Image (tube, rainbow, N blue to C red; front, side, top):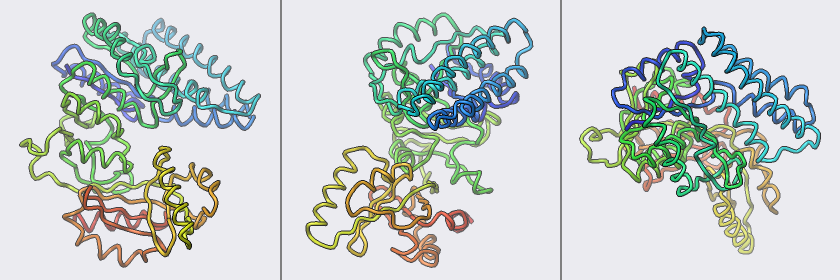
Length: 448
């Protein structure tokens, strides 16, 4: 069987929904499981609502939450003609916003937002999306069923970044998903969300809808997982930043994992574990041009359509802090060694570590900066934001990159760059103010 996953950028317009129907009709394999993401700005606005509530501003929180429902209502009015179908859908929206309001009110009273409450609030983005797509397809007379992933996927209680309990989830797949696939030609569910063993809503991390799709692919023994976005496959860099990007035709699981951990948002690092278990073929395609350029992620580098595919990939990660730990004495160096161990054992999102001039420099996501500042001798090196450019499969183009880098960056002053031969990656850490131009110059030098 096949599993299809549609991103929120696709399902943010009537055209995207029409393309969804075309893809489903043209898919010859039945039954099909379809994974839905929250539409467009839904998750961002729900996160804003939670932030306003935490600051005690319930009014702004509800305005942000109501905007989410207004956006879903607007797209539903464009898509669905039947008044009775719309009434059923809007009733679910009303129930949802009431529950969101109760959660936001509680947060605004105590001015504290726990990860558990945050997960409960954010989950409604996917829930509203699932219900919108389901009612749309019902009106179009598809033989479609809908199952909430929170009734299937079981995780631990690590709210905000929960890990699936495979055995418990497998039992639910057998009990709920497989019977639905026998009953319907098409079964819908949503990504990102789950429940722990006590029934509390959890989420599996940022951009984890693709992880959900991969988990289902593994447990259902799917042959292929196709992820539809608004872009033709994985590009050589972010097409929002670089106009003339090229298609990355194929990647191995290992290369895809390296890209994922270095910031490629299309791929969740954990999803590759599940796909590798059953050698599931992964493809990224544009819903707006399904027959256009696409990217394959395959299990072995010697598969015929993987040969000679070594196109470099440039990934930009923004909003990075540069922290520095002074290590003038042997005692300080030992403390630094202990802290390095603590960093990696804690799972904090560290982008890079670098020793220079008797100091340990750590590039870390800015939201984690406060955790580092609690350590003695650790301080922010500069108030400016830093960015990281990571070039995957960089070994063959170092001669093109190094002249650019040596003219733009003075090591240890404006940033760092180094090549890791084990992973075939080139990392460049520099001030954000200069990163955009540097990314464009590198991309032009490599591909033109």
